[in-house]
Length: 212
Image 1 (cartoon, rainbow, N blue to C red):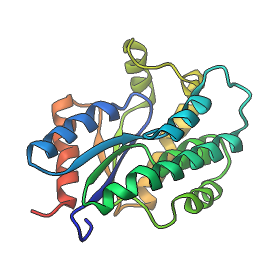
Image 2 (cartoon, rainbow, N blue to C red):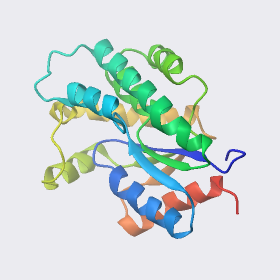
Image 3 (cartoon, one colour):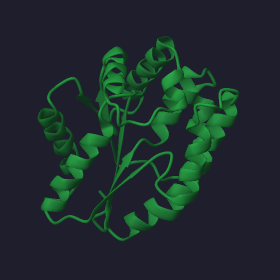
């Protein structure tokens, strides 16, 4: 919670965890309470970052090297942060963001094998002191998450969907390491429950950061 009432809340999880759906429901809950709130996503959220997103996630870009990938995510994150997130926070807004620094740590740092500390260093340069106030980790088994994706015909197919199960299992392991590393910031929500329960638990964690 910030002095002006703003809060930076990020949502993390493996593919198919339901982040987009949960964020929209939480946004509606906050909006119904009269709180100023916006939702956004990474990579993306603003024009420049959305263009970088198309490069990163293009299924045809199979030759992209892992450090190139990590640097592109960090570049998109920087522009998104200074152009959209920081101004919103300075205006006392609650920002709900689909992915942030923990995704880079899990996907590029651990699953790609670059190293958690190396990727953390890249991203600290990109974001400075702008860490989330609270991170909601939506926890679901990778097999179940990917099964959800394959059943959702409306979801975009991107380059990460082409990865083997071993990669997604490493992402899952990484998030649990991050839970232990940042216990005060990251909270755990079991995403393998009904959407109503998941939304209720996520909203409860978000509201705990805000003033009564």
